Length: 170
Image (cartoon, rainbow, N blue to C red):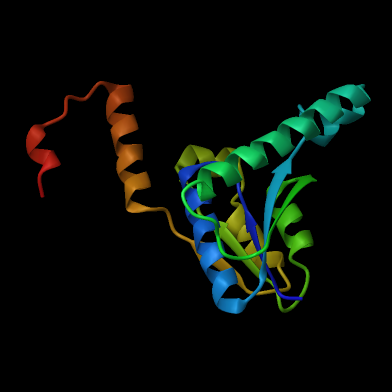
């Protein structure tokens, strides 16, 4: 069976990727599989150092609740028109997505997110990992123009740079 696999976190970029994946699933008459990857606090090393099973169960429950929130936010106005399966996977996002989209007929959809120099240093790119390791085609969805504008506004607010009203008009 054909599947379109998409990774989500709840950010604007992942919601854009989710909507694009739903459109691709409609075109391909495929199942939409929505994946939210989660890790235990402190990563895998932290879980080896005495994290109780109840704490892991709480993390798993929180991930499932987050996935429900993301799906509700994305498809509140209109249903996607295809079969949707939500999946929470314990692991790093790139590996979880590549493992889920292992069929050659699958399509893996990922967002690019914001890639500031500091973020690139601290967190590797999920899209690059998927492009390098996936056995199926990978569709990388660029950030929305609104997301770029929002990032600029946040930086202005952080540095307290006054807004010139002339910048608001085209």
